[in-house]
Structure formats: structure tokens, C-alpha cells
Amino acid sequence: MKALELVIFAVFAVVVLYQLYAVLGRRIGRQPEDLPAPVATSDPVLQQPEPADEGAPATGLAAVRQRDPSFDVGHFLSGARQAYEMIVIAFAEGDRATLKNLLSPAVAESFEGAIDTREAEGRSEKVEFLHPPRADLESIDVDGDAVRAVVRFLAEFRSRSKGPEGEAVDDRRTAELWTFERNLNSRDPNWTLVHVDAAEA
Image: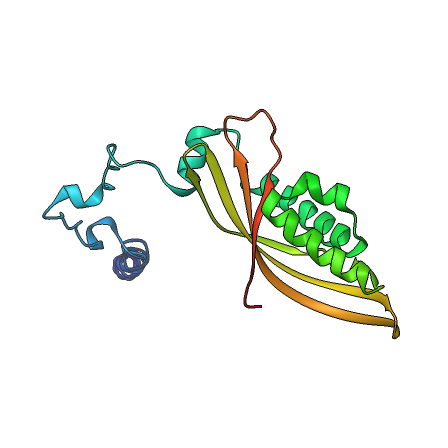
């Protein structure tokens, strides 16, 4: 009887050990040897970025920062936006003194001519911005000792005008390209408006 019990226990032990091996010995998930071997590139130089041509002159923003390392695009656009609002408001109000400090002689002459015509017709105007204007840097580069930046402005403002025919209120949307310029050799950090173009909205 005892011999039969030993045989039964032995068979039972073999079954248990086989089940343990079946569970613990199984590989779970992807093993290191299952991963594909890395593929070597035929030309390792292609993995490295091409070196810059040190002999080529810098252009655009790189040229500006080469002459003025402190130049910051965000700071410049913030100042350009403020100048835009000041110039638009000053032009509407006929504030020649403010315009003179912000415009080049050629642009100032054009603006003052328009103001003279408006005043001669007995008209006046005031504007208020409905939203802060949007300013985006279109291009910037160095030309000799001058740096020129073209800024695209998108603006919405309300114009209140008075004339011989009465008063009028007009909401406008404008898109313009303004070119600002600064002399890199000057101690004056301010930019001057040198050109205005219409742009697509």
C-alpha cells in the first residue's frame, strides 16, 4: 500500500513540476535577441549636419545679430507695435511734433501734406484701436551701416471724423507693410519709419 502511495505522489510531483516549468520558463514579451540588429549606414558623414560656409557673409537676422548681439525680435516687435499705434493716432489728430520724431523726412513730408489737405477742407479725425494690432516680422537685413526691418501690421480701429457734411463713424481693418530703419553706428536706439506699403489682409 505504501509503495502505491509513493508512486502516486511521485506522479503528482512530476505533474506539478511540469506546470511550474511551463509557467516560469516561458519568455514574456520581446527579448533582447528578438530585436533587429542595428543597420549600419553606408556613409556615416550623412549623419552629421553639413558645416556652415564660413566664407559666406551673414544675411538676415544673423547679420543683424552679428552687428548688434543685443537685438531681440520680441522686444523689437513690441516697440514697433507701440510706434504703429502712436503714428496712426498722431496722423489722425494732426500731431506733427510726434510724427516728426518717428518718421523719416520723406515719409514725414507725405504725412504732413495729407494733414494740410485735411485741415484745409475743414476736416478732423480721431481713431481708437478696437484690438491691439498684430505685428509680424516679414524681413530684416543689414545694408551698410543701416538695418532695415519690414513689419506686417494687421489692425482694426474706429475712426470718428468731422467735416462740412457732418460727423461720421467708420470701423476699418487695415493690412500694411511698414519698413523701419536704424543706423547701427548711432547711439540712438530708436527706429524710424522710412516706407509704407499696402498689404493683403
